[in-house]
Image (cartoon, rainbow, N blue to C red; front, top):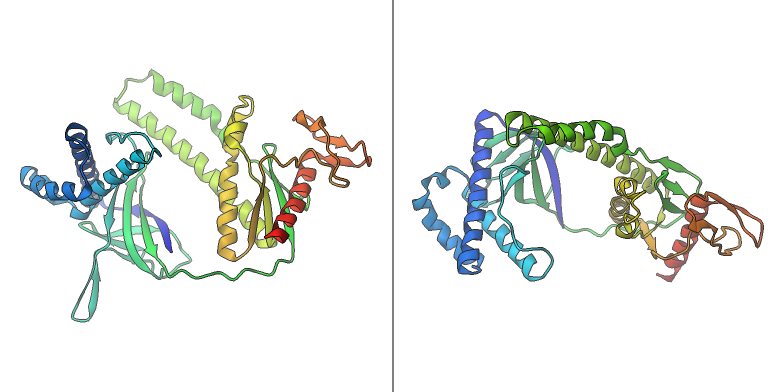
Length: 375
């Protein structure tokens, strides 16, 4: 089982210069062989690696950086071509220096006189990581861990658009099967825009609407950017401010989602949600911005992953299951709820007054209970 751990990286000035050189040479190798493939036809990674040896004599500056990172650029290019050939993505594009920069390097281990040596070493006690050519670099993250068991496979160093540095370390762990818990309770959850999550226990989690909070400032900065001279110093300063604002929106949204998911997972053994067609829902231009800001699919992915981690059960009901149209007491259907402004409705058959979101979560819960017994 592979798992990635992401840390904030704090390089000194010399390390920062070397990181930027590696970004540039990594990009140079990728673009060089992409141009060669476009001109002379597709080449396999093995042939590119053989050609790479000759480039060290033609461009001596390539020896300044980690050689593994340059080979990883070739393998990344090959992966891009494979995805293109399988019709998953478009034709590979040239990399530029104005977006997020990153490079990957592989971990190489050797044994000499009974001691094991590795070019990537993670030390959470002293908060440092040893990387090829860079040496020891300060890191921050995972304060509750003192050691991570497993073999390091590779590390990816990146600089995002806010000029912060990060390193993601992929570690291979022994796969273990989590014992499934004996279910004692079940909950159905209804995802929405007004309330982000409504449970069948009548518990509501508010939608923070992170984008709406900072939309005014975001618009102001984007207008300012459009009036500035492209690629000037002030242009890049404003661009960084916009990137930092987007980063705050993303981090705040992620923090809220994790808190909601952790509370649901902690209190329930079977969790049932609806499988939403977010792409279709976002065609409604009045609600598209709020729907995408809520990140429904991300919440479902977190629920699925956490349930797998803790041995709990997670089910998704069908996209077209009429959860909002069915009465929570008798199951009679109505067409009143086609109008999204209808938040409460009275069942014509049994007279029960239904709350739209609570009724939907209850119906989802019972459908999930049926799926659980069938499985």
